[in-house]
Length: 118
Image (cartoon, rainbow, N blue to C red; front, side):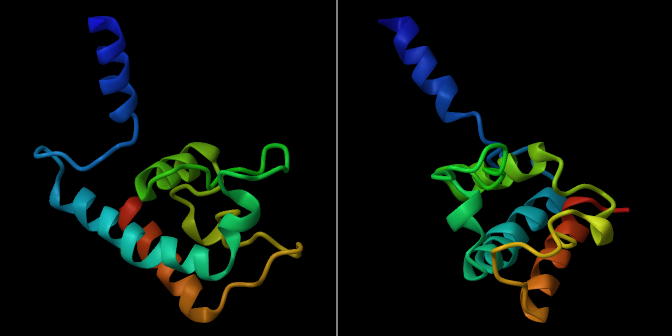
């Protein structure tokens, strides 16, 4: 029974939630993800095709049940990195989804600049 409880506790800690040891920069990046970037991705309907329920192979880079799980999934996917202006997220090219508005692109860039400080 203790083993099952430990598995449940460890499973609950897999997303990189802010902790008391998180730096101000990490907390600011997390706030920008939750308050700017993720709402922009949702407004552009990105999570519809690229989220948890994606039926497209290797396209579920926005999978997760919490805001931070979605961020962790995106970061692990290689779709975004420190080369933010050439990030595949922003240079996705033509596909069936909507294009980002200038405001949505600015929100995502703000988060990327905080997530990958130079």
